[in-house]
Image 1 (spheres, one colour):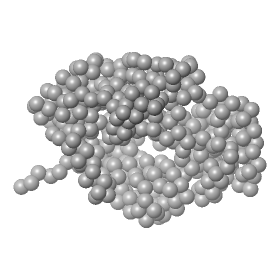
Image 2 (cartoon, one colour):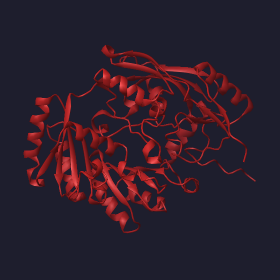
Image 3 (cartoon, rainbow, N blue to C red):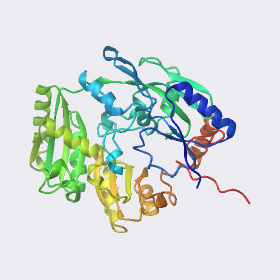
Image 4 (cartoon, one colour):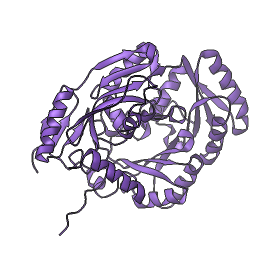
Length: 410
């Protein structure tokens, strides 16, 4: 195997120069930042690494205008620390994938946040990265610089193009600069824990909570198989259903009391105060139960919320898996021992009304054998192919990461 070459640009102009060279030479590139998500997707078919970890710096922050711009390689932890100092946040609560792959937390970048379209438990209310991006600067696979969007929410010039790169995993363009909307952080939060519900009962309780006037910002169910993994084993005694309330202190107090009374038929509840509540939702967000130092397959499955428990029950009749639920049951994290059972899982997703599944973690040998990202329906796949042709006609950007390369004709 050829030795991997490394390019580490420090300015957007150097990214453009590298891309123009790669286009001229028809040389494929693997695009990385701090490498916290490098193992997601199929192995990239490239021996040249474009490392954006030196393309850093916050270039604009106007707290009064709720806007922040930064170079793509800027660590998300650095940005979140600055926001916290100003009592602000990314409302979409971006997940940190690093610990799932055995690396320290806080290594993800702001560019990777957009490319992976990250989100967290608050997605039910706030959406994902694509819903908060205001503007980008990038270099396409044609070796051309382009900009989209701007620095204010009402500037919609090219806005959809900025969103279009969300979740493209570096296969359409190399983003060099991003501008995100930021929002005030809640003054405080509490989490109501319902005790002892099974998966189906929890789905009903979460649906009732989300439909209430309590303005729940997080709804997750932690079955008995994972509960001891949270808060350093502080959560014990059977499954817990977690409901988060955020805002100013008097409002939070009132809404927790209201929710407790509303859900009394679902059992007795405990309340986590702010510090423990924040810690719990970070662990739910970052898939803490499965950050076990192994390469065992981990799936991220999205289905209709009420279908989640039914899918997991049916799947377990065919294969073993551990699981817990976020997004009111609409997001299922599943861990298996060896075989990712992709065919079985995706057939069940179709059977239970549709959705998608991404194989987030697996050994490289398994990632070469299965569709890591959910196969697209033919019309959507054709549209994606046309988009790829427009942005990267020579297929030099992260080739093979999202779609298995076509076999050469003989």
